[in-house]
Image 1 (tube, helix red, strand yellow):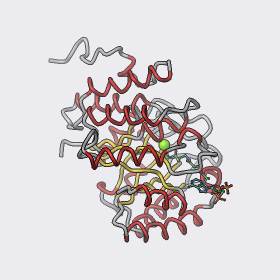
Image 2: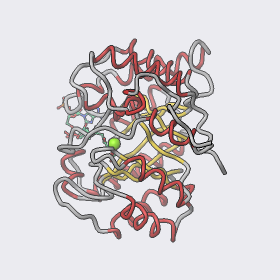
Image 3: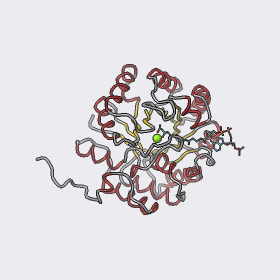
Length: 310
Ligand code: HMG
Ligand code: MG
């Protein structure tokens, strides 16, 4: 199948690391531009404690506004919004707002789990099991994230068995997909091959997404390797914005623009139109008054390579 799905996480993973707050109106404008480019899956915000992650404040109002636009068919049509949920309180808000999809996030190291969500891994899964039951009752889809799968900023190496166990825990609670996170952008092709070979031994590739931060410039090659191993879903962030406030030194996710450029060149359909995507890049760049890390965005709109192999 020459097709991939991109899950746009710029409005969540991208903005959560920014100190300049972005208004609801501008976040909706960004969502609308992302939709116009052809993206169909957008993680729009995070129902976490705004004391911990100030830039995600007002995610409820934002999500409500976006969902209202869906129902009134003003701006958003044929698009799936999801939100990050860390606990029961976050889930109650998701329910109140009326989302159709949530993302639960767990860690593969105890230290990162405690720093990120103030719970041990097993406490977090206990909470998530309860939330999953409620979500199923309300026909809300659940996506799972696993962080620090390739290395932890506090503990270093990660035991593969923990990742396999956590994948199984998510599977048992009925998540439809697990996004495997390289939170600190430490992996390269050899690690990706090793981890996915063991995950794909027990699970179909369609159960996984790749979530690669680009700290060491390896995200694109990691996506290419994951694609070759059978993955077809990748999390990407407009402009390459992002990072996790609890992962010291981690920089942004792989840029949506760079991933679309690569897949376009390979003849692999992402459904995203690069020139329209760059409108969102330029808009965000103006908001922050700086250029964004996306390499294709930095090429100043020159979408066509200067030379091509004929
Ligand atoms: P806590 O302090 O342990 O919570 O935080 P608590 O239950 O003890 O409650 C303390 C206070 O927090 C109370 O308020 C609660 O009401 C409030 P007070 O009485 O003091 O005024 N509270 C909440 N407020 C709003 N929304 C909530 C909520 N829950 C409690 N949902 C909590 C626990 C998880 C909330 C906190 O640790 C938190 O918000 N952490 C933020 C985690 C986060 O957003 N991390 C970044 C995203 S994860 C990521 O980036 C990785 C990913 O991209 C994949 C990858 O790259 O690997 C997904
Ligand atoms: Mg992330």
